[in-house]
Image (tube, rainbow over all chains, first blue to last red; front, side, top):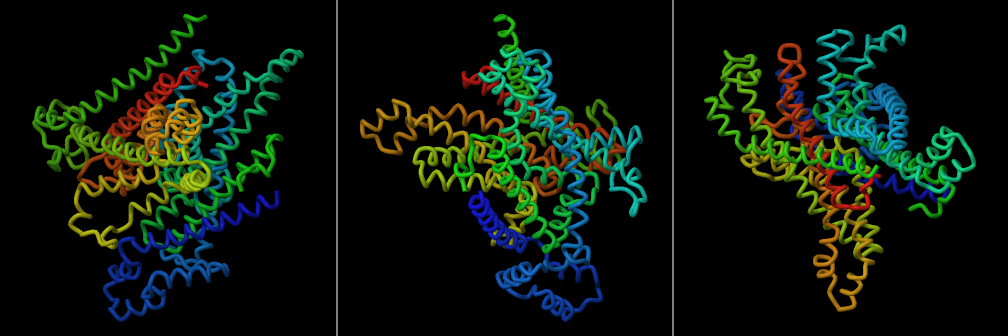
Length: 321
Length: 297
């Protein structure tokens, strides 16, 4: 177990390092230079000012030198300043990470709460009319562009009915949590609807396999109630592949957050990644992308650990290291 | 019981069949865009500020957009772009994926470990943020001539290349699995015993037998590619206007949702309908091509 974890953590560190180099190079190829952008917006800046500012931020240095400087500072916990927000990168990141986790967490719990009974129900009656309806609903969920779903929800609930706010995260320094609650509804609904379909299909497919197993027949034969057979025996085993796939999808959660947060102007990580890339805020973009990668890697590791923890037949020695 | 099951299966395939017909009609309509344009007597590029946000009429069956251009004709031209990107990128991805999967499954051992580790690594990347960075890279800084980088077709080719670069993993995994099982079959062992070379065994004996899962995976990739293209174009990073795509036609829709909701509805509806049809078709193909999954398990 320890050896397994250590080896995986080492691999993750290597991936992050490679990723940081790759992203630095790519960000270096973006159009425009932050100081040039600043100069373009300020007629009082002289070429001497521009050169001085570039030297101050190290922008006159070659890319590899800048990267090494960044890395040595980053390893000491200093990730530099944000160009757009004029704050240290971590101070920009922290509150947005919290906002995103709130959003993703709520959507995840809701989606699982719907997908679980739906998938189990469909798997118990394969090829019934209800199963077909669930199947079509799942396909719709997988196939709908999330940003268009968000547009439709805004059109219906914010513009036509006027029930809910279309964007933002609530008044700054809102006194009570319920003042912010309305701002949650549409983004969470978008993320939930976009992920229910996939989850339901995993649950259904996994349950179909388990319900055919011998131990299910044994459980029925010894007179257990159908509810116990399905929910205690079959579902427990059906959970293993579902947990694995869901944990492997951690990376796509960030993609979903990016679209949804941009649509609803939700101040989270996804919108921050988009804004920082588009606004030439390289320091923020780099750290935010690394954080997204680290989350995905953590999800993969959790998938493997959960796999071994849930299935006593799998030992850590057998897992790929 | 048996009759009922047959009916259900038939119904499911009818859904796939209906999807195929729908996709064929959409493609046909997109191909016929210039004919529709001529028949209506409009020009899809003609900007007319006096005709902005016109409601549906005989001249403009679906009305006009924020620049007074005919919405229907632009949707058809946008369909050309979106469908082309979907199919072209999925085919390119399928080519890479089939190659990687074949090599990994056939040679096994270290080759397999290395290729599958790369595949896993690709899947673990935060796809959309990375695509945004790649799409925003200034090509002229890579030494690409400005005249080419700024050309209209450049955004088209670029998005195809980008999406193909990340889209091959599903095909690779499925082809690898199928290759692994095909490699142990008697006819492959017989070919080995007859002294056939690796290349001949892979191309002549294994490839035809992994075609079915590859076709299914490619079909499902088309749907994903269309979704990716639409979101990138929507964010202003994919297909560059004035070239229309269903994604970039929605770019300004968020601000127009109060004045002209139909501008936000139509392009998205076409993306949705196309992708769901592609996915249902893929599902039907899976049932039809692989008898083991007939129970849709």
